[in-house]
Image (cartoon, rainbow, N blue to C red; front, side):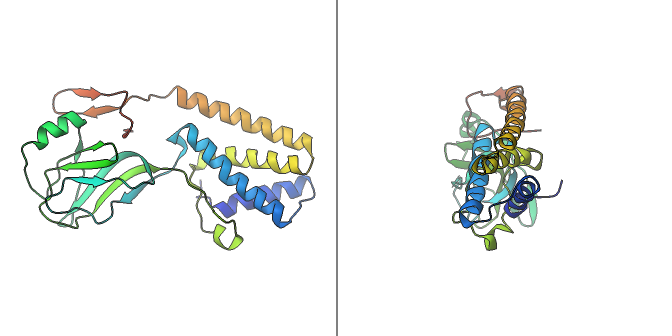
Length: 236
């Protein structure tokens, strides 16, 4: 499916309202639709980060010589992988549990070949400790859902991507249509789209509930499972 922007979703809603009813194109109504798109996206994403798009995010400044810990950006919610570039070579260090990592880190080795990493609270730790600065560190992560637009304006909506995965976009579409038809007092249409939204929402909730939520971290000898590990989720 093609990547959708905020403007794509806004136009899709408006076109459907026009087909069924007389669209009120006042500034109040268009901004209500935009606010609804923001609100429902954040609501759906709050149920499960399964719905949120992942991205590679740079850690500001990269490595720092003789420093093993790095602050995770506030926009990052859950990290699935980490990569570090050193001397034009891309490395994917192995993820360890916190206790495994700190036992290993007591050896105080220093090198620009990253072998292991872990997360503790809001920080990433890498080992061996880098010996030089400015090697790029990137995390593959789900980001915390934010407003698509803070002050809705047509001129800025056209390049703002939806943060939700493409196959969940209809949850936004059905909800926003139901709200628009309610404002138009077309309650039959509003009820139809509200039922579509609830059906899809229920299906997604069951999908998430039936998926595994435990985290398995590969170690040298055995697999380490920590169901209370909230900073990291590993996916296949």
